[in-house]
View 1 (cartoon, rainbow, N blue to C red):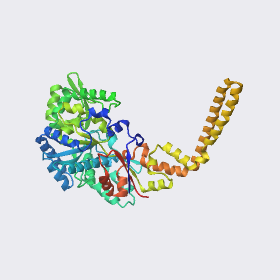
View 2: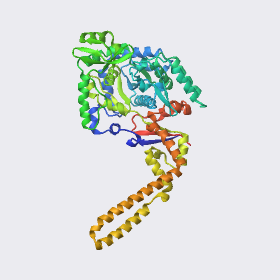
View 3: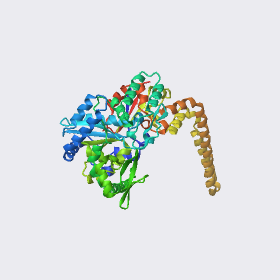
View 4: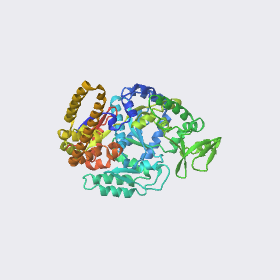
Length: 533
């Protein structure tokens, strides 16, 4: 296995906003509190200690004990839960909605980046203890985002008529997908191990969110990772002050909009739309928006209306019926966790940058924001193809059209290049121009126009030769396209398209172990793993 470290650049499909945070653009500094580096944790530990009260620790611990009672035994996880009761124990978190078979690869990378962050902090701050935590966002209701994954280029989708929060959905129909995976596993030496892992996760799952959680728990068994579902009545009850403000004062919309206006001035467009009320209401298995209508509160897409007194009374009695959207979800998380850092992708970091003043308003400490690791894998077939094509590993990341043209030119530059002919043509027209100047200077423009016309004709002929050579090299070019598509399947970075299963079938548990060994959330480089030819 070869490992390459590459700088973050736009050609690897990263947005300019993402790159600006990674490269510590000074214009962004007013929008976050701590630099994403290890020394920052000296300050953030003290700040969080002042804010976070022991009652919240007891509440968090009780919720985790309840949730872990439904899961397979994990001694280290149990120990981590116990340690959360100590005032010197803190969390570092990441989050994602429950996706089918964990969804795209980057979900795995988020988890491992967070685990390795905790490990690094435990080494650097031995007087404290740090627990990696994965928050499962089961309240999201966008099933289209979470009901599919890609395996060997094929889209596999869970079809269900259920509505409402994805995490609460029943798992009917998942067994058919597990059977399809088993059939697609082929003769892999790890197919039995993988299918056992997935089937065990399914059998012990009370709902879709639990199925997702169980897969993560099995993949990261004994790593210390805790998985938390925040769709709990007791947690919502503790967040009532935030929800009440959202209903009555609408502070989040005002503050976030102001921040977004400032970010737009430095080229950062709006990442998340802040509504007047950034809460949903659960009704009949649906997650519906709440809107203010004069003196009442209307539940969108229903006939339900509440007066102010009624909705506040309902909030006190049934906080579990209220659900934060993306604008106040970070507040909800950070208010109830002894958390120091959030690990996320570029899009997530962008919407967290809109939140700092919102956190200040609610007296909740703003965490360190760390960019999760980005990873690419080249399997042994790709490595063999690169060798056969005489390409360097780094070459395969170029734009495909540019890569093809460069390859053809390199393979047949003398055959198709007309540079010499272009130079000869320029010499001929230079001599003609010199003669014309002696007779009639006004003819010069006509001569230059004719020269440009002929040069354009040669360019056209050169393009024709290039096209002919491409046809001659079609076998090699198909191999090149196939290799490029392994890195950018469906024109997306591998980590945003592929699922972990195809890598686990090839590498087994070693897939996770290699990632655990090499991912570092403080790194500012992309990691490329290249399997030997």
